Structure formats: C-alpha cells, structure tokens
Length: 280
Ligand SMILES: N[C@H](CCC[C@H](N)C(=O)O)C(=O)O
Image 1 (cartoon, rainbow, N blue to C red):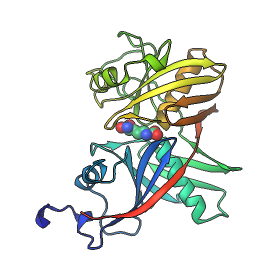
Image 2: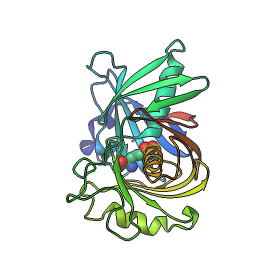
Image 3: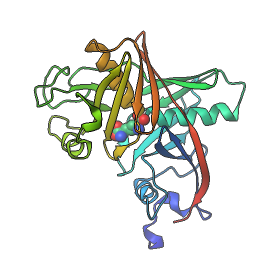
C-alpha cells in the first residue's frame, strides 16, 4: 500500500495492537483506542478483516473513551465489510470480560454503545450483558413501510425486531436444513429492510431450547450472534414457544438469554485467543 494512502490508524509506526477473541465462535478483533489520538478508520477495518491477508474477524470492537458520567467506556462495532453496527452482544461480552480481568474488584460495568448504555455483570464465573429492550416499531427496526413486525407478509412469515440492530427471524421446522447461505443474503438486502438486516433461522428443539443459525449483516454466516440470540429468544417468547429463559444452540456453542423486566440478559462462553500487532 502506498504510504500516502494509509489511513491514520495505520501510520502508528509500530503497527496496531489488538486482541483476538471469540464468544461461541463469533470472532472479534479488539482494539483499544482509549487515550489515542487516532481512532480506527474503515480502511483499516477492511484490511484487518481479510481472513487471508489480514487477521480476520466477524466484527472489530473498538474501545473508546466515554465522556458520559458513570460510564466505564464506549464501544464501536465494525463489521468485516467495513460497515458499522449499532449492537454486538458477543463482542460486548468479550470486552466486558477483559475489563473484569483488568480489575477483579469490579462488580459491574456500564458500556456506552450506539444502542445506548448497557450494563454488564459478573455472576459467579459467567458474564452477563443487558442488551436492553427489544423494539418492534416498524420505523425503529427499521422496515421500509408501516407493517406489523410480527409475522411479516412475506414467504416464511418471519418476525422483525431491533436489538439496537435489525433482525429478521424465521421460525422453521429444522434450522439445520435452512438454506442460510442462499436466503441470508437475499433477506439482508431485501428492500423491506432499508438498513439491511441480520437473519436468523430458528427451530424449537426441546422445552426452552432453540437451535439457531445465522447470517449476519455485513459479515455473512457466523458461528454465533448475541443480538441474534436475543432476537430469536424474544420472538420465540412472543410466539408462545418458550418461557422467559432460553438456551440457544448455535454452530459455535451455546448462548443463554434471560428476558426479564424489559431487559434481554445475554451470556455464553468467552475466549481470549491471542494478541498481536497488525503491520500494514
Ligand atoms: N455478532 C454480533 C452481531 C453483529 C451485528 C452486525 N452483524 C450488524 O448488526 O450489522 C452479536 O453478537 O450480536
């Protein structure tokens, strides 16, 4: 790459330090831009996101300073295609685990995201993140026109919901047979969703246990999706399929959602894989 075309963050002479993490196989690069002059730019995201020429990730989570009182940090989420996302449940869990590790005496965290200020808590050996309340208003999701978001009038009658970011949830007989790679990108780019959408295929496996496969907006097929798990759990609850607490079997493991007093609490495994220096 020509030196003159380098985005600001790439001109850090010794490279860009990062941590690679995953939550149930949903993988992330975490960059700490707190106290930095340069924040991350789209060009850097796309270069790092390349699984052959870069590091590779589903999302890049960027830690930023927050000026809101009582807030520990601000988070910005980038998809692998360089687009921004309003929410990312699994990256929020991963970052919360880093912060709890930094300071073992911490009981809770407040994290500012485009979706609002989220709480994270450590309960025994699990980290829970409150993803907030689901939004079903057509202009909140957003949908292209005023429609009832539950059972959209298209084939498969999916539900639409926002967990800060848009989701389109298909309830199917057997999620393992869903044509995720074919239908995912079609729905992601359907005119019904002007901001594009994440797409989940969900089936009921047993009492309060759902199987979920996902196509993520701006990324593609992923092994798990935290906001998608919240979307699937709350839509299943509204359809009378599950109770308030749901386990989700995803391709990369298990997630759990507790839908409680207008809060969608999310938990699941978190793993730190390696740290490194990205050299442009
Ligand atoms: N993996 C994320 C979702 C990323 C969202 C992104 N694909 C979008 O909304 O554009 C999660 O755990 O919630």
